[in-house]
Length: 269
Image (tube, one colour):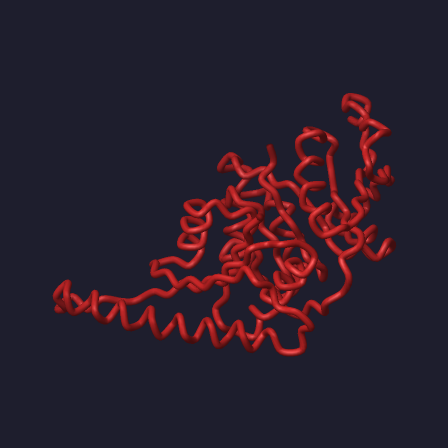
Protein backbone atom coordinates (compact mmCIF):
# COMPACT_ATOMS: atom_id res chain seq x y z
CA UNK A 1 0.00 0.00 0.00
CA UNK A 2 1.39 3.38 -1.00
CA UNK A 3 1.54 6.17 1.57
CA UNK A 4 0.79 9.86 1.01
CA UNK A 5 1.73 12.58 3.49
CA UNK A 6 -0.63 15.57 3.37
CA UNK A 7 0.70 18.62 5.28
CA UNK A 8 -1.81 21.30 6.25
CA UNK A 9 -1.77 24.58 8.17
CA UNK A 10 -5.56 24.59 8.70
CA UNK A 11 -6.01 27.43 6.20
CA UNK A 12 -8.47 27.52 3.30
CA UNK A 13 -5.48 27.20 0.96
CA UNK A 14 -4.71 23.73 2.33
CA UNK A 15 -8.13 22.31 1.52
CA UNK A 16 -7.16 21.70 -2.13
CA UNK A 17 -4.38 19.25 -1.22
CA UNK A 18 -6.56 17.48 1.34
CA UNK A 19 -9.36 16.93 -1.16
CA UNK A 20 -6.95 15.96 -3.96
CA UNK A 21 -5.33 13.35 -1.71
CA UNK A 22 -8.80 11.99 -0.99
CA UNK A 23 -9.47 11.91 -4.73
CA UNK A 24 -6.31 9.89 -5.32
CA UNK A 25 -7.25 7.50 -2.53
CA UNK A 26 -10.64 6.91 -4.15
CA UNK A 27 -8.81 5.31 -7.11
CA UNK A 28 -6.46 3.08 -5.16
CA UNK A 29 -5.90 1.87 -1.63
CA UNK A 30 -3.56 4.70 -0.59
CA UNK A 31 -2.82 5.29 3.07
CA UNK A 32 -3.21 8.99 3.88
CA UNK A 33 -1.53 10.75 6.78
CA UNK A 34 -2.72 14.28 7.44
CA UNK A 35 0.10 16.23 9.04
CA UNK A 36 0.49 19.49 10.91
CA UNK A 37 3.73 21.06 12.08
CA UNK A 38 3.72 23.47 15.02
CA UNK A 39 6.46 25.60 16.50
CA UNK A 40 6.16 25.78 20.28
CA UNK A 41 8.33 28.53 21.73
CA UNK A 42 9.99 27.90 25.08
CA UNK A 43 10.45 30.77 27.55
CA UNK A 44 13.99 30.63 28.94
CA UNK A 45 12.69 30.63 32.53
CA UNK A 46 10.70 27.41 32.09
CA UNK A 47 11.98 24.17 33.57
CA UNK A 48 12.06 21.07 31.36
CA UNK A 49 9.07 19.53 33.14
CA UNK A 50 6.95 22.66 32.67
CA UNK A 51 7.82 22.96 29.00
CA UNK A 52 7.19 19.27 28.28
CA UNK A 53 3.77 19.43 29.95
CA UNK A 54 2.87 22.54 27.96
CA UNK A 55 4.15 20.94 24.74
CA UNK A 56 2.14 17.78 25.32
CA UNK A 57 -1.02 19.79 25.92
CA UNK A 58 -0.44 21.93 22.83
CA UNK A 59 0.08 18.88 20.61
CA UNK A 60 -3.16 17.37 21.94
CA UNK A 61 -5.07 20.56 21.09
CA UNK A 62 -3.48 20.78 17.63
CA UNK A 63 -4.36 17.12 17.02
CA UNK A 64 -8.01 17.85 17.73
CA UNK A 65 -7.89 20.84 15.40
CA UNK A 66 -6.34 18.68 12.68
CA UNK A 67 -9.03 16.03 13.04
CA UNK A 68 -11.79 18.64 12.91
CA UNK A 69 -10.22 20.38 9.91
CA UNK A 70 -9.84 17.21 7.85
CA UNK A 71 -13.31 15.94 8.72
CA UNK A 72 -14.79 19.21 7.48
CA UNK A 73 -13.07 18.56 4.15
CA UNK A 74 -15.01 15.31 3.78
CA UNK A 75 -18.26 17.22 3.29
CA UNK A 76 -19.85 16.44 -0.06
CA UNK A 77 -17.70 13.38 -0.73
CA UNK A 78 -19.41 10.13 -1.65
CA UNK A 79 -16.83 7.92 0.03
CA UNK A 80 -14.09 8.41 2.59
CA UNK A 81 -10.89 6.28 2.52
CA UNK A 82 -10.46 3.78 5.32
CA UNK A 83 -6.70 4.13 5.81
CA UNK A 84 -6.35 7.59 7.37
CA UNK A 85 -3.88 8.75 10.04
CA UNK A 86 -3.34 12.06 11.80
CA UNK A 87 0.00 13.37 13.02
CA UNK A 88 1.18 16.57 14.73
CA UNK A 89 4.91 17.22 15.08
CA UNK A 90 6.88 20.09 16.58
CA UNK A 91 9.73 21.79 14.79
CA UNK A 92 11.33 25.19 14.32
CA UNK A 93 10.82 25.15 10.52
CA UNK A 94 7.75 23.63 8.90
CA UNK A 95 9.52 22.47 5.73
CA UNK A 96 12.29 20.69 7.64
CA UNK A 97 9.76 18.99 9.91
CA UNK A 98 7.88 17.71 6.85
CA UNK A 99 11.08 16.47 5.18
CA UNK A 100 12.28 14.71 8.32
CA UNK A 101 8.95 13.00 9.04
CA UNK A 102 8.37 11.92 5.42
CA UNK A 103 11.85 10.40 5.14
CA UNK A 104 11.77 8.56 8.47
CA UNK A 105 8.34 7.05 7.78
CA UNK A 106 8.97 5.97 4.19
CA UNK A 107 6.22 7.92 2.44
CA UNK A 108 5.78 7.46 -1.29
CA UNK A 109 4.44 10.97 -1.96
CA UNK A 110 3.93 14.33 -0.28
CA UNK A 111 0.76 16.16 -1.34
CA UNK A 112 0.68 19.86 -0.47
CA UNK A 113 -1.30 22.92 -1.54
CA UNK A 114 0.47 25.93 -2.91
CA UNK A 115 -0.99 29.39 -2.69
CA UNK A 116 -0.42 32.37 -4.89
CA UNK A 117 -0.19 32.62 -8.65
CA UNK A 118 2.62 33.77 -10.88
CA UNK A 119 4.74 36.45 -9.26
CA UNK A 120 2.69 36.40 -6.06
CA UNK A 121 4.37 33.14 -5.03
CA UNK A 122 7.69 33.82 -3.32
CA UNK A 123 9.52 30.89 -4.86
CA UNK A 124 12.70 30.77 -2.87
CA UNK A 125 10.93 31.41 0.42
CA UNK A 126 7.97 29.10 0.02
CA UNK A 127 7.52 25.77 1.74
CA UNK A 128 6.41 24.20 -1.55
CA UNK A 129 9.54 25.33 -3.38
CA UNK A 130 11.73 24.08 -0.53
CA UNK A 131 10.13 20.64 -0.67
CA UNK A 132 10.48 20.43 -4.46
CA UNK A 133 14.18 21.25 -4.36
CA UNK A 134 15.08 19.23 -1.25
CA UNK A 135 12.73 16.27 -0.81
CA UNK A 136 13.79 12.72 -1.58
CA UNK A 137 10.07 11.89 -1.57
CA UNK A 138 8.14 12.92 -4.73
CA UNK A 139 6.05 16.05 -4.17
CA UNK A 140 2.54 16.71 -5.50
CA UNK A 141 1.60 20.39 -5.47
CA UNK A 142 -2.04 21.39 -5.82
CA UNK A 143 -3.16 24.99 -6.59
CA UNK A 144 -5.28 26.38 -3.77
CA UNK A 145 -8.00 27.30 -6.29
CA UNK A 146 -7.99 23.87 -7.93
CA UNK A 147 -11.40 22.54 -8.91
CA UNK A 148 -11.61 18.76 -8.79
CA UNK A 149 -11.68 17.04 -12.17
CA UNK A 150 -11.10 13.51 -13.39
CA UNK A 151 -7.42 12.60 -13.64
CA UNK A 152 -7.54 10.64 -16.88
CA UNK A 153 -4.43 11.98 -18.65
CA UNK A 154 -1.02 12.78 -17.21
CA UNK A 155 1.65 14.64 -19.19
CA UNK A 156 5.24 13.77 -18.36
CA UNK A 157 7.59 16.54 -19.55
CA UNK A 158 10.89 14.86 -20.42
CA UNK A 159 14.31 15.71 -21.78
CA UNK A 160 14.55 11.99 -22.74
CA UNK A 161 17.60 11.38 -20.54
CA UNK A 162 17.15 8.59 -17.98
CA UNK A 163 13.85 7.84 -19.71
CA UNK A 164 13.68 4.21 -18.58
CA UNK A 165 14.09 5.04 -14.90
CA UNK A 166 11.86 8.09 -14.99
CA UNK A 167 9.06 6.54 -16.99
CA UNK A 168 8.94 3.58 -14.63
CA UNK A 169 8.24 5.97 -11.74
CA UNK A 170 5.61 7.86 -13.73
CA UNK A 171 3.81 4.68 -14.79
CA UNK A 172 3.89 3.37 -11.24
CA UNK A 173 1.89 6.41 -10.19
CA UNK A 174 -0.43 6.56 -13.23
CA UNK A 175 -1.38 2.89 -13.04
CA UNK A 176 -2.51 3.33 -9.44
CA UNK A 177 -5.10 5.91 -10.52
CA UNK A 178 -5.87 4.40 -13.95
CA UNK A 179 -4.60 7.40 -15.92
CA UNK A 180 -3.03 7.51 -19.38
CA UNK A 181 0.48 8.95 -19.78
CA UNK A 182 1.65 11.21 -22.59
CA UNK A 183 5.33 12.07 -22.89
CA UNK A 184 6.13 15.64 -23.91
CA UNK A 185 9.52 16.51 -25.40
CA UNK A 186 10.49 19.75 -27.10
CA UNK A 187 12.82 19.26 -30.06
CA UNK A 188 16.20 20.97 -29.69
CA UNK A 189 19.46 20.92 -31.73
CA UNK A 190 21.03 18.40 -29.35
CA UNK A 191 18.34 15.76 -29.84
CA UNK A 192 20.46 13.73 -32.24
CA UNK A 193 22.69 12.85 -29.28
CA UNK A 194 19.79 11.43 -27.28
CA UNK A 195 18.57 7.89 -27.69
CA UNK A 196 15.00 7.90 -28.99
CA UNK A 197 12.37 6.22 -26.81
CA UNK A 198 11.22 2.71 -27.62
CA UNK A 199 7.96 2.63 -29.58
CA UNK A 200 6.77 -0.22 -27.35
CA UNK A 201 6.30 2.03 -24.34
CA UNK A 202 2.61 2.06 -23.29
CA UNK A 203 2.48 5.84 -23.71
CA UNK A 204 1.85 8.42 -26.39
CA UNK A 205 4.94 10.49 -27.20
CA UNK A 206 4.78 14.08 -28.46
CA UNK A 207 7.79 15.69 -30.12
CA UNK A 208 6.86 19.36 -30.11
CA UNK A 209 8.81 22.21 -31.72
CA UNK A 210 10.37 24.51 -29.14
CA UNK A 211 9.20 28.09 -29.58
CA UNK A 212 12.35 30.02 -28.76
CA UNK A 213 10.57 33.33 -28.38
CA UNK A 214 8.87 31.85 -25.32
CA UNK A 215 10.24 30.49 -22.08
CA UNK A 216 10.25 26.74 -21.43
CA UNK A 217 7.47 27.27 -18.91
CA UNK A 218 5.35 29.05 -21.52
CA UNK A 219 6.01 26.23 -24.00
CA UNK A 220 4.86 23.61 -21.49
CA UNK A 221 1.85 25.66 -20.47
CA UNK A 222 0.79 26.00 -24.10
CA UNK A 223 0.83 22.22 -24.54
CA UNK A 224 -1.09 21.69 -21.29
CA UNK A 225 -3.86 24.05 -22.36
CA UNK A 226 -3.97 22.60 -25.90
CA UNK A 227 -4.38 19.01 -24.71
CA UNK A 228 -6.46 19.63 -21.55
CA UNK A 229 -4.03 17.57 -19.49
CA UNK A 230 -5.29 16.88 -15.96
CA UNK A 231 -1.89 16.58 -14.27
CA UNK A 232 1.77 17.27 -15.06
CA UNK A 233 4.84 15.28 -14.04
CA UNK A 234 8.37 16.70 -14.00
CA UNK A 235 11.78 15.67 -12.70
CA UNK A 236 14.02 18.20 -10.99
CA UNK A 237 17.78 18.32 -10.57
CA UNK A 238 18.33 18.98 -6.87
CA UNK A 239 22.12 18.95 -6.68
CA UNK A 240 22.93 22.25 -8.32
CA UNK A 241 25.99 24.46 -7.93
CA UNK A 242 25.83 27.77 -6.10
CA UNK A 243 25.92 29.55 -9.47
CA UNK A 244 22.96 27.53 -10.72
CA UNK A 245 21.00 28.19 -7.55
CA UNK A 246 21.70 31.91 -7.80
CA UNK A 247 21.00 32.46 -11.49
CA UNK A 248 19.00 29.46 -12.69
CA UNK A 249 15.82 28.69 -10.77
CA UNK A 250 14.42 25.18 -10.63
CA UNK A 251 12.07 24.83 -13.59
CA UNK A 252 9.85 22.53 -11.54
CA UNK A 253 9.63 24.97 -8.64
CA UNK A 254 9.09 27.87 -11.00
CA UNK A 255 6.35 26.05 -12.88
CA UNK A 256 4.62 25.24 -9.60
CA UNK A 257 4.11 28.98 -9.25
CA UNK A 258 1.98 29.35 -12.36
CA UNK A 259 0.43 25.98 -13.16
CA UNK A 260 -3.30 25.65 -12.54
CA UNK A 261 -3.35 21.83 -12.43
CA UNK A 262 -1.69 19.43 -9.95
CA UNK A 263 2.04 18.93 -10.48
CA UNK A 264 4.02 15.84 -9.44
CA UNK A 265 7.76 16.41 -9.07
CA UNK A 266 10.32 13.63 -8.72
CA UNK A 267 13.99 14.02 -7.87
CA UNK A 268 15.89 13.41 -11.11
CA UNK A 269 17.75 10.07 -11.06
